[in-house]
Length: 440
Image (cartoon, rainbow, N blue to C red; front, side):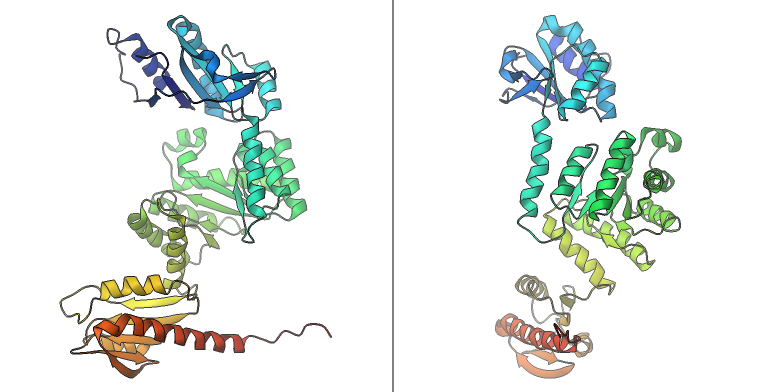
């Protein structure tokens, strides 16, 4: 194996480390138990960082060695537990050409203090600037948009303080993983002074180790207990301007957890089925789970989590709210599935209409039905409707028959009528708004 291979480990497990070591020793000394497959690269990234003494060191110093690069931070409990393993790895295999490098993605003062207490026998480089850059990048975004911005921050209280200065609208932080109480208090005091709410976000995938041991696996009760630990910290600091989320990828666990917590706190709840999946499956899971909670009257804000374009998350969230009549913005389409009775292609017509009319925000009901069996009934109840027919289709407006139209002209005609109706409806809505008197 080429000794210039670079192995990058982020919070690496002991089994993974030693799986690599055995691979270096060769096939004649296989591991007694198989380890996980690790990602290796022949290409060494080029970077330079300063060490704990402030001396800049380039990764190229160790050319010719097989590097184990461990990215860690002082606030990361698993990282701290791995240091003895990495020390042992460095001691035992240094003569074989293996070099451990620690890259601390943390603030210098914290790393230096940590290294004074914990012995490390391999070089440690500090990537403090990356954390600072992340906060400053937020400031650049803040200066360009007027939408509310929420900063999702874990462990590093200094980044929280900096983005607060830069105008964040909400901090997603779990007080329990910030570290010392003085750091938690600094963040809470800053949020209080600047009127910034905090969101506590509990996730089944990152429950505290002791709760995993207590419950054996993530459960609704474990999620609630974790959440209440963070709530208790804010209570002690007399900070009540927070909201709470308890998310899991399992629909039933999520719903049960929110129902439990809803009876224990008065603060707003932020809903979500986390890591719900790809566009189709994630939409279904989110619709079922969030729909159940919203129908119970639980939930104040929500996020749809999809492995898809974030714009799709927003669209799905709006459609969930529209289907429950909690929001009325935009067009509510009533459309039939494909069947042999259709007199025009409903599927392609609907796809085109949704795409063309995404900009329409005025609430309207539009029925697109391909045949005369259900078409007239649905069309009469909509603002604009079309019923498939032979030889021509029938357009309805405000529940009344308006005119007939051929398939060739159907799409353009519908778009024109819908836009015209939306403009009239918007004007009516604006006239109904109360008059504001400015000045005296």
